[in-house]
Amino acid sequence: MVLVRNEAEDDATQVLVLAMDNAKEFYNVLKTLTFREHAEFEASPSGVKVTVDDMKCLQAIAYLKRDLFSVFVLREETVTFRIPLGVLCECVNLFGSSPNSSTALRMTYGGLGEPLKVIMEEGGVVIRCSVRTQQSDEILDFEFDPENVVSKIIMKTEALWDQFVDLDTSSNTLAFAVDIKPSRLRLSTDGELGTIDIDFPADSEIIEKFETKEKHQNKYRLSLIRRVNKTLHLAQKVSIRTDTRGILSMQFMVEQPDNQHIFIEFFCVPDTDDYDP
Image (cartoon, rainbow, N blue to C red):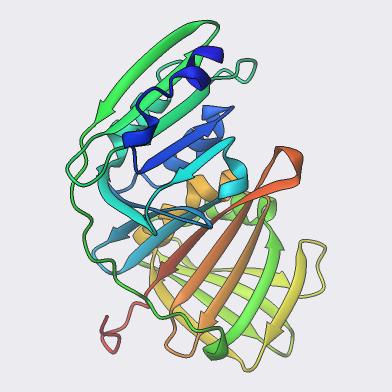
């Protein structure tokens, strides 16, 4: 990793310099967002945010705190750019994803119009990539206000993953119903196999927190909800919230070494003609 850490001769001209001791952690996060071609990349004093928007109906945001980086140099208040996510994923994974190896990662960005330069080192071998960037697009703000949250459920992801992979894909929608008596989260599909209900009682071992102001149900396009599957498989916990407009927030916690965490959040609009982004 010495070569990667010592390649700092042009750092003074870079508005952003990032380094991680293990590129696989970064790659695992990026690949959960590859359901669209491009992502918006934003660096601020608190860390890095990578956002992918799907036709203003679904939005995924990965939050990486600055403490996750071994080097974090930011020479502007914020740095934003648009980047082809699939290309960046391929670059970061050029050494492969063997669990028994560690790839050092260094990324630099010189400003508007400049490429994102990616340098990786493993076992003394260094790979350099240059990924074209574009000016960042305006990102839709879903305005998800905690004050307007109707329900919040925190649960372990393992059992939810087991159910998500077996959902009836002939169903157009997936319904999220939060009941009070009995207190439970119910997921429902309605497809060629008929109506299938999956219940998660509030007092089950997999649910850590169950809060709701009222009984409610909203339906979401199953094709959109299935975008979370890669993240669901990677994460250990998920916070499921719904606001008064029916917008669904699923925030996943991914554990990292040294008691660090990465959060990946999905916002999804309800399947209704009443919602207008």
